[in-house]
Image 1 (cartoon, rainbow, N blue to C red):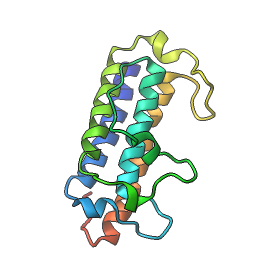
Image 2: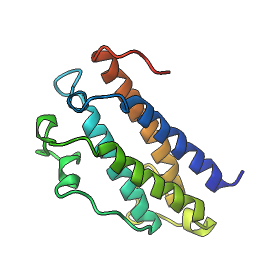
Image 3: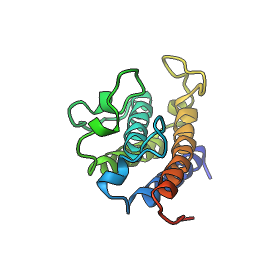
Amino acid sequence: MTPNDAIVYALTGGGQLVRRFVEDLKPEEFLHRPSPNANCVAWVVGHLALSDRNALKRLGASLPELPAGFEHRFSRDEGCPQAKEFGDVSNLLSIFEDHRRRLIEAVRSATPEQLDRPVDPPHPRFKTPGEFATFMGLHSAMHAGQITLIRRSLGKPPII
């Protein structure tokens, strides 16, 4: 197994968890918050797509077009839209999956030098694009855990 293979494994597993936990949700369930300040599934999936997009930029990969306002809608910035303002959420999973697929392809084809160069600008959690891509697998798995809590608050059965 190469470092690229290990990173792809983490990205694939994290992406599969997200898909499994959201594929049966109705659009209105994507907007449900288990408590007033908790994330909703829509924000989590949009945020994961933007995170993968950031990793793609660091790897120098091509980026797909996003719907107008997407980056602001799913940002972590103060004053960004809230769940009731997200609009149509039916395309969120496909946007996340497109970014995840592109990230996996970029990692598969990356050279050791591409994965191991310093990230610019520096980041406190990862020093290289390879570490960043590995973190995206962990990051999506962590957020999948949030989705399981949202599912349970909706009365949905556990999946795993």
